[in-house]
Image (cartoon, rainbow, N blue to C red; front, side):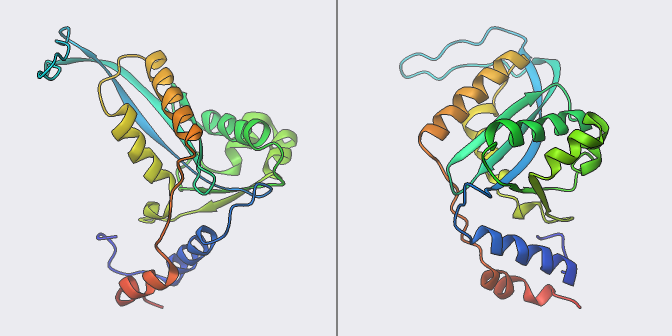
Length: 219
């Protein structure tokens, strides 16, 4: 928020919509799901680390070898304590489309529709599904999903960012040298958090927004 000098009516409208949505109870027939994605650089140790011992921490050389990058999709149902994580080689329209297909047909197949909160990346649009699956299948998938976008400088309103930050601290912040290890690590991490039903308690309300941000409001 520090980089925004003026908050327009459009910004307020979208912000209020999300804050209202976050205040609603969880409904499994129309679940509110927040999704985002983040690149992970794969790094290999240039020297074998010295393992930790009683009273001595692990020692890792500062040099490393670059092994490429992967993309990590994260979708979280904050009030149900559930998340879905998928590692892909790239972040393309097809990758996004297949992740949406997984949400609709695998993870939330019994829902009437999904209320999906997401950012404005150039892949996050209906056209990605149409290009990937063709209009007939894309139309069927899109009937089961409602895109709810944040806006420029509004990614702080997406609870998926909170989940991604937790993932980085607990699972993916260190060096990981290959996609297979990354997939294994995030699968174990997400399974454990789902088992414990770790949810996200969002406390920032419309009233809080008006109290803190109203000096930046413009017509």
